[in-house]
Amino acid sequence: MADWVEACGVDDVEEEDVIRFDHGGRTFAIYRSPDDEYFATDGYCTHEKAHLADGLVMDDIIECPKHNGRFNYKTGAAKGAPVCVNLATYPVKVEAGKVMIQIG
Ligand code: FES
Image (cartoon, rainbow, N blue to C red; front, side, top):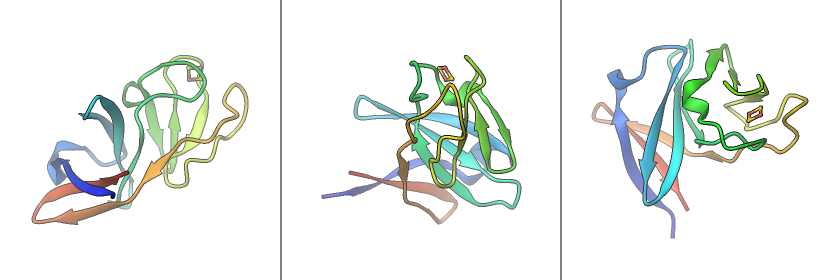
């Protein structure tokens, strides 16, 4: 059963930025795109255990802070070496000024 969980307020994330969200012993990353949509992925890079929330958001790309691996944070697609395993993504909705993510 997948639950919707409140991750943050809509203003807690700047446009074209990412924040970390911890829940139930897991870490997620919450993104706000330049066109003002919200997305969620696993919080750790699939290469080594680096926090993607410490990385850099450019358009629809998150660049890992550790070895500059890149993912599309909208689809989770790994964009080349050193990252080859896609990132898990999670459904997001905005309700009453809150960003909600659905986690399995
Ligand atoms: Fe992210 Fe290596 S830990 S690219």
